[in-house]
Length: 22
Image (tube, rainbow, N blue to C red; front, side):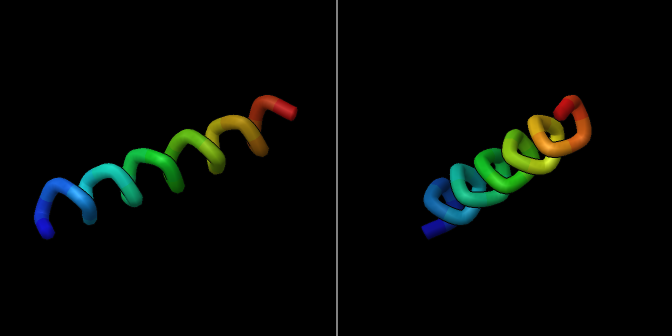
């Protein structure tokens, strides 16, 4: 469960950084 939460958190962080770059 913790690892799944971590993956989701990382994915959201990546998408936010992509939005900032674009």
